[in-house]
Structures are given as C-alpha cells and as structure tokens.
Length: 310
Image 1 (cartoon, rainbow, N blue to C red):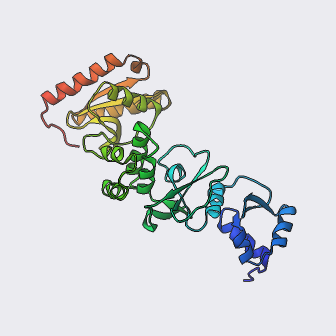
Image 2: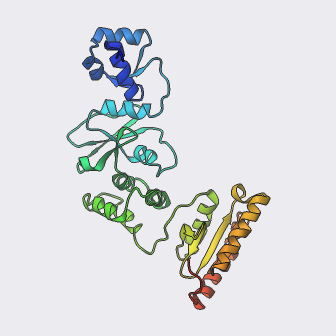
Image 3: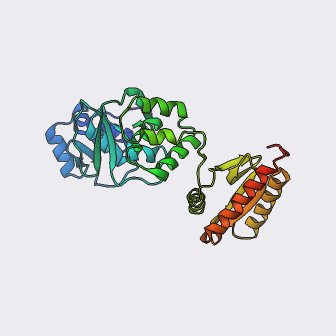
C-alpha cells in the first residue's frame, strides 16, 4: 500500500482525525509555514475559526466541529464541561448555544465568541475522560458543575438521566462533592441522593406535568418508569402497589395502543397492583386527581397483604 506524504496529505490526516479542525501549531508541525497557511486560507482550503484554529475548506457545520475548535483554542489542558459535557453525555436534552470548556487554574485561555472558558482549582486528570474522541469532564464532575447553575427539577432530571444510563453512582458523586467544599449547589446535589426521593426518569411532557402535580400536593414521591415484570410503569408506589399511567396522545392513541394498554393493565392487576390511568384533561382538575391517587395509596397500604410477587 502506498501512503501519501507531504504537507497536504499530513494536514488532511489531522483534519480527518479532528472533526475537520486543526490548530496553527499542528499545521506548523506537519510542515506548513506562515506563508503556506495564508495561501491555503486565501484559496479556501482552510478557513479561520479562531485565532490559531482553522477548519477544512469553506466555513461549514461539522458534527463536534465547534467543540473541537474550542478545545484547540484552549490548549492541551482543556476539556468540555458543564452544559457541553452534559449534552454529550446525554443527560441534558439540548445542545447549548455556546461551548463550555473547563481548564485548570494555572491555565488562562480567554473566552471567545461562542466559547465560555471556566477555570477550576480542583479538577484533576481523573475528572476528565475521552468521550466521542474528545476530552470531557466525567459524568460525576459534570453534575457537580451543573449543580452550581441549575436549580430544582432541571438538576434532578440531569441526575436521574445519569443514574438511568449507569454513568454515575451515589458514591462517586459524594466523593466529588467532598473534594469541592464551599461551592454552591453541592448540598442540593447531595439532597437528591437521599433515599426518600423518588427516582427514575420521565419520558414525556405529560409525565413531567403529572410529577409536578404530585409534588405540589405533597404526595409521597414515586418511582418513575419503574419495571414490573415485562412492563415499565410511569409512576409506582411500590409498598402500596399503586401504579399511575399517564396516557399522552402520542403514545396511547389508536386501536393498537388501546389493546396494548389493556393487556398491560391486566398483567399488572393479576400481579396485585392497582392501576390508575390519567389523561392530559384529567390533569386540568388536579385536586380531584390527587384525591383519587392519595385515597388509593392509603387504602392499599391499610390492607396490604403482600400478595403477588414481582
């Protein structure tokens, strides 16, 4: 096999390995002079993204291209963090409008348009891992950073996603919080690890709305998207053996969905659970809905027999 050589081939190899992004230092390392770089930019072979960072050809969007360019601009010690890391770990739903880069305190790269640089005095090499070919703060460290800027349900959802995906465990999160005393958000993150909190993810806007109604009414937290046999249920009070299923139009419309839901209800009832189905319209009357759920939980707990095994 013949391997192509020369500056052009070497530049192409670096670009191919780095999401079509390359730094000036790398261009010089593979044999490009300042004049050659200027000529490639003039010809449209390269485009300037940041000072000292270039992309292949005319400016164009490339998957992870913005993140790679931001890391090249930050230098060898940078890692994607906060919202950028959370999106790559799939624990936050949307890509941020900017790229978050975390660097250790001695390093002082500056923020640029579209890039926010965060300096950390406590981050270590163990807190950074390679993910999708890029250095990214670990899931536990990412959650610790998010806790300083996210409050309430958004932080809880990020934690639940990370736990659901087996990206973190409570021990690791507690260890990271212990290493960063005094930072905002640490206590909030630890409180979310308390055993009394219901856990699990929500999969729809309707489930989120139902969770908000339950919490506003002070109903004991339920497990979310818990598995019972071959089924997942939206909300489960395990000791009381009460299930609430939220019937959103997207997933519960049509004859096939109706048949599937009835089969699921039959299975759950055969295994000793009470099933309450809730529609979006029923959530418009939260007092009546909550009263029905609370009554079902109280009655089942009062006459709990232990029948059924799941």
